[in-house]
Amino acid sequence: MKPNEPSRTALIPARQRAAHQLLDHGAILDDPFAIKILGEDEKDVLRFANAHPLASVGRLLSAARSRIAEDALSAAVERGVRQVVVLGAGLDTFALRNPHAARPIRVYEVDHPATQAWKRQRLAEAQIALPPWLIFAPVDFERDDLGEKLAGAGFQPNAPAFFTWLGVVPYLTREAIDATLDFMASIPNAEVVFDDMEPSEAFSGEMRKLVTERSEQQEKTAERWASRLDPSDVAAILRAHGFCDIEDIDYQRIASRFGGAVHGLASGQAGVHVVHARRRDEREV
Ligand SMILES: C[S@@+](CC[C@H](N)C(=O)[O-])C[C@H]1O[C@@H](n2cnc3c(N)ncnc32)[C@H](O)[C@@H]1O
Image 1 (cartoon, helix red, strand yellow):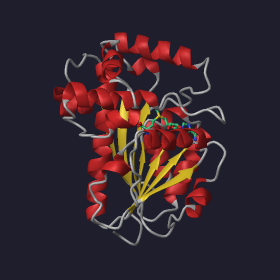
Image 2 (cartoon, rainbow, N blue to C red; image 1 turned 180 degrees about the horizontal axis):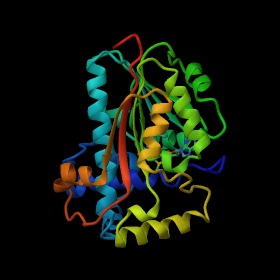
Image 3 (cartoon, protein in one colour; image 1 turned 180 degrees about the vertical axis):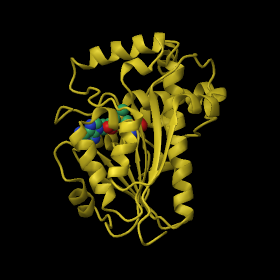
């Protein structure tokens, strides 16, 4: 990413979540802020959603990964976890929708400084009030020390935390992925949900063509897919960081669980995964 420019890719899942409200009635992820935070006309959102038949796949993935993360987060909150860290938050609205507001949870939104400044401006323009449990922490994963920045924002490194890391891993270098996991591994009973991408060969016909075109377009920009990971490598990386409970949900499982809720879902195979992993340290929560 360019140091002073907000993420352009953050608009894509935000539009997909907005389109999911309009076309699929929020059946996977009910998000009353999705359209408002985006600040675009509904007809433009629909034009984006109908621009390509495979946009339906993106819509499924954006809604499903948030739903999987938020379901796992609810279980963690039931077990007593009170710190939530949304890594690379973009226009994610979990903090605004927080269903656990009756409990003293804190939601740390971490993002590239330029993207976070843009989001704060979007929130102000949309006249969306900031909830008291939301704390912003600007961090560049490629340059900054995540632990230091979070501690500076009030995060307690000795208490358990749940991390969501959605739509971010493919954009990071292996060094930044490892550094982020190193930090998570230092937190007792850390738990994370993230998504990652395999190399293009794991996508079928039309999808492979689209992913290859996107990848070529991105090469001309400052935001590009830097890491394509094989599922067995992902499991090995997580185990090396002390994560033991690892659930890797592939596209087929995502489509069979949630695909029926997506209007006109295109067929095909995508090499994308949503991964849920948890450490079990001595002090169980
Ligand atoms: C595709 S968007 C996903 C946003 C959000 N998680 C969602 O699902 O809507 C990628 C996000 O990763 C963030 N990101 C990418 N590279 C980053 C870096 N080096 N440091 C911090 N954030 C980064 C961008 O600012 C952006 O918010």
